[in-house]
Length: 201
Image (cartoon, rainbow, N blue to C red; front, side, top):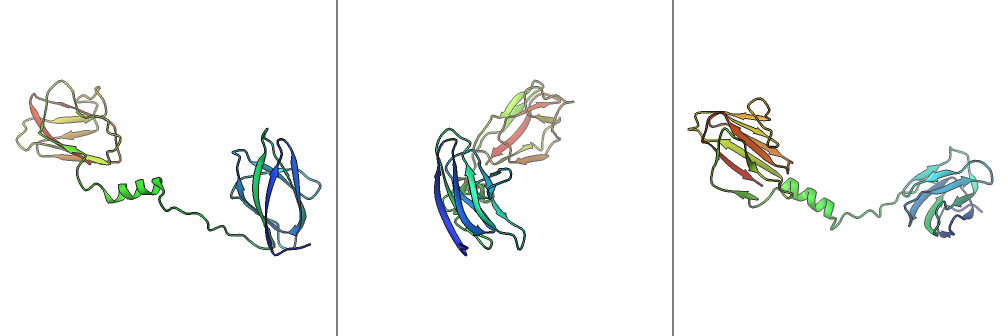
């Protein structure tokens, strides 16, 4: 019998099959408690296809199915919630309230209310030194060469930074900043005792 819309909660035994008799043209897999995709076949013949959780399949206009056969390819029972209808099904149950992912994105967009860290200027010499260590909570940083510097400061990502291998070259007074990088920053100077201000947030 044709129904406008109906949902079915079914449990398919391990490596087993389960059928639903329904005259419709649209199927949506709302829930699947296993990571593996269920295999579905329309009608009694033809090949089975994988149906992922959240996926919907609509038959062409004017075509209907009179039954679906599901196969569980896993060695444990599989619990499904399936929606069948004569028209499209929209599932609006997605809820992002309290999501740690979205909280992290909001925090990134808003920025910190206080800096992660900042302190006394760093002295950069002709031997490389680390300016910033790895910081997993950092959202960005900036460094600025002191206006009275006599030489250049070269920045790099590790201790191999040189005057010919660098990501930023800072003459006196120059500032460089970078967002969305949490790794280390190293520096080397063209002459001894060059000063560098720094902060991270």
